[in-house]
Structure formats: structure tokens, C-alpha cells
Image 1 (cartoon, rainbow, N blue to C red):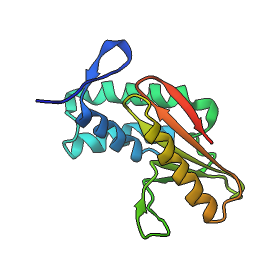
Image 2 (image 1 turned 90 degrees about the vertical axis):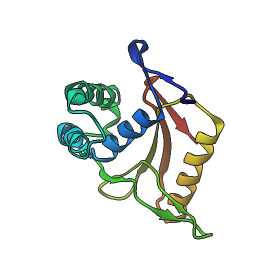
Image 3 (image 1 turned 30 degrees about the horizontal axis):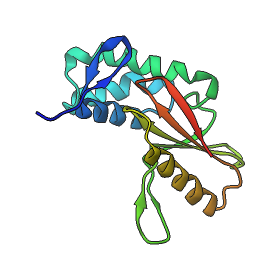
Image 4 (image 1 turned 180 degrees about the vertical axis):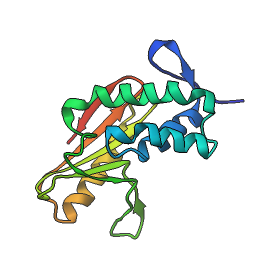
Length: 156
């Protein structure tokens, strides 16, 4: 069928469609307490088979636990999932997750990836960082989160 698999923990493989489902579930999660509801929503919309519910909840819990020390999912920040940003040319950019400190002094932009690292990913996040700085946020950090490999990469 031409679909290329991507390695996950434990040697499992999934295709691009499964990565999109995981991405959509993450877009529904503001804090760790939203995991079960986000997965249930994916089941209700038939994006995910009901038989995979518990497995997906555990997977999402694992992903989020792996970045717990970064405070990305604990309510520390105001969360904007899939928020649209219009650049100077009128093109819409949509970072996966933007976190804003309560006082606005710090912004973190995170892009989720389920495949292998690629130079285009860094360029993409750098664009997001530049756009947010251009909006007047003084301190903006960019991160790539490769979930399948449990790798978090800072983009300067």
C-alpha cells in the first residue's frame, strides 16, 4: 500500500494514519487529567478502535510522564493547542502546542513528531518562534518532541 512504518517503543510499528490519530489526541490534552477524555473522544469519533482505548491511554500517559519535569502538561502554563498564527504574507501557521506563562514572560512552542528527525522540522519550529517573538513575546523557546523515540530537541 506504499505506507512506511515508523518504529515505536517495543518494536511495534504504525503507519502515518496512526501517527495522525496520536497527534489529534495530543491536541485535545491540556493537562494530564485530560488524557482519558481525549482518548474517549477519539473512540467516539471513530478515529480509534474502542479495543485500543486502554492501550492508548497508557501510551499517552507514558509520553506525558516522560516530559513531566518540563511542566508542559501540569497546568503551569496557559495552553493553546493547534492555534493559528497568520504570518506577514497571510499564510497560516499552526504550532501543535504553545504554552504561555501566566505573566506572559515566557512562551514555549512545541511541535510533535512521530517520525525520524529531519532538518525541515527545525525550520518549522524556528518559524513559529520567530512569529511569536514578532507578536511581542520577549522570551520564546522552541522544542521538537519526537514521541516514538522519546527525544526532546531544543530549537534555537
